[in-house]
Length: 587
Image (cartoon, rainbow, N blue to C red):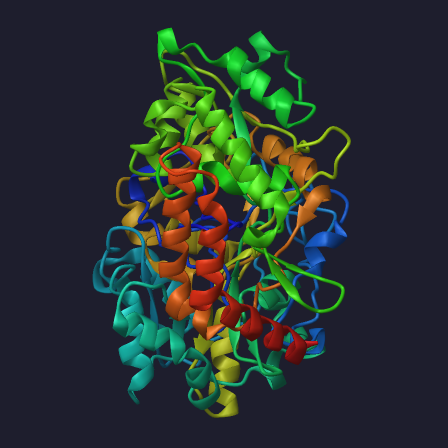
């Protein structure tokens, strides 16, 4: 049920901070939303991420819901700690080996005026310690000079709750705008988001567009791509603020011990045929070890094979302004045939169709059941950590991109670089400015006093510091600090920081450099298609089920063409029109 950008998970990991695998409450990915919010780039909480180097033009080609003038002028935060691996452009992230020794104060003035602020956000962790017994939450409120209260709603209940809130008159000051398919109430809520933004949400254009954002430097430091791709602007006005995440999408990763022993550490397949040969060489069915493996709800890794064959990242915008769906292209169909051939060759772990999710398959990969998996950066962080603790420990490393045909174009599908967005209820200018000052404080960068307090809590109570300067969370630290959903209100620019994994920041920043030069985005990121939300999820389920049946030989390849026709006739053509109209309107 995932689209070309796929669902990713992310999470900062520090000694004592609860591991993302155990605390994760996965959000469902959608194929778009009524306001054009794209597939989730990253699903569960975390800090910012990392990476240096050259700026790939492909990632800046994503469509916004309005011209650039409506978005804040990007201004990277200056004067902060020096990263071990510095980003050279907004499409990359900084990397840190250790937490900065002397966190700076990024917001010199107290932002609040002493009143009550009500926020509604999502619960992806166990509930935090209630405010009345929570020293970290109280410390944040004191620093904000605001009595912040959260209405924290589970991910399963959030879309329906959002619909109820949007339909009423008693709105929170700050609202996390998350919706996903699943029920009539959810669909009704999502379909009403554009109208809600225009009728009841605050128009932020006068406060944040262009150089106006200089008054809120932490918000201005959020890369423009996140504002665009999160659908923060609608019909030429800015209504929401994004939660930033990294841009690289899912990638093939390898069991480096097996790969290096069998092929050599630097070996990269020349083309699709060579990759098949490699997977055959790695497979040892008699030992219950296979070349590649996956779980349910991954389309049998079809997005990875589609990229290899040069298919679009979900959609492609042609020179005449028409959108082409990936399913319509000969490249995608060829990739389906290739995946079918791999299954027939016996290189897939046979449980790939029965493992209930990619999270389960990830654990099997870490347990040395197969050699190649596919995951986002902070998904294979989890498998890397798991793999190092097994009886056959190994490092997880990415495979560089390679084409289906030798000498062909390299392609890497990027995400939207965000995790949904946040709106403010309408209010007088002084109140809106206060809310933006508070959000600017919450968006404080990694290595700041504000970030440290929100993430780790009160020193000596919620965390201690190890010999390298890294926070070590106490038993109550997660519930006091990390579980309070500050990170689901607005997100600072991502960084890579996971000190318990050896060379983590360098590996991840190197991975960004490995993939981003070949970045291909999705032109519908940040665009509007009501049909995509109302019908896209159901249609995608049919496509996914059909693709899996074709790949594993339960249906003939000839059924592919009818599947595409049905998708187009049952809503795909309407999605195309709505997206094209949206792109035209935002040009």
